[in-house]
Image (cartoon, rainbow, N blue to C red; front, side, top):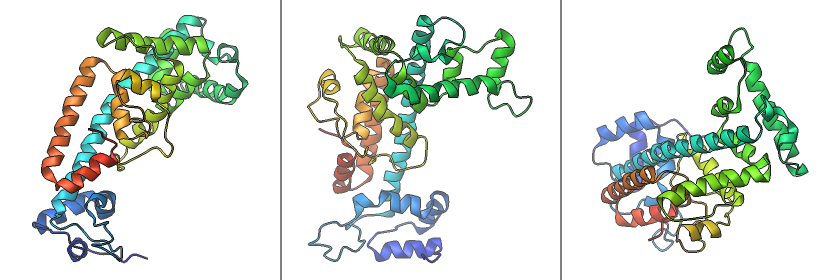
Amino acid sequence: MKDFASHAEQLEILEERGLTVPDKAAAKRILSRENYYALIDGYKEPFLINDERLNPYGLERYQEGTEFGHIYALHSFDRKLRLLLLNELLKFEKNIKSKVAYRFSEKFREAGSFLGAGNYSPDSRHHHERDRIISTLGNLIKSHKKRDKVRYPAIREFYDKHKNVPLWVLVNFLSLGQITHFYTVIDEELRERIARDFAEEYSEEYEEIHLKPVDLDAILRIVFPYRNKSAHEEVLYRFHLPHPVELGTLEGMLDMGKGSLSGATVFSVLSLLKLVLSKDDYDWFSMELEKMIRELEESIPARAFEKIVKDAGFVK
């Protein structure tokens, strides 16, 4: 088992491994707020010596000139990146929830139509997930009937006023994962209509594109885990999906080289957001991201910076 080490002892260990700590008082304050494991173990990798010629025994040694502040700068960058990305992913989440609820309700207008299994895809491969979605929506409606400890007071308030709870209210209480499954199990005509809604919005502000349901499926499949990563204090910049995703069609729409997004990296998510955000939102997002990257580049050694942007999947 690892023995307890005070902040002072933790800094001594880091210095023994070649890390420079110019301001120990400031470093102790940072460790007390951020936790040694989350800060050091989460962000040390780009600053370590991985060259076998320089570090033949594979010991944890820091590159010459690496300071405690460099690791903290990367940690701060990643935190800002999570917040920035989450803000835009929430806009996309709201967008697709709105489109799914509108198009489904437009086609199936009777009250509670979303509880009818016949209003979803007839493909038997989707029946299990369809039944889970119907059960989730049904439970949301039932939740307002509890006398106390109502989980979603807004649902009860809406029901008390209108005597029913339509889909465009319920979708606001579904997670992105659940709305992703909902989009998967609706019929193909609706899937195509919703994908076309996104394509038409993009075409009005940029150039004409044709987005298919499988393209929107791919975007959702990549975005969902990054949305969860962004919502928690986990390392984001070097997070990769375990398996590459074929995105050749989407790469073509964005005038990007084949395979440039298939690694499903942070760069993939940042690029794909252009297809599902308004131009104003994406322009602001890009500007803020570029500013953050420049600040990071100015704050850390060049070799570490090159490793970081490579891990994030950025291309020139």
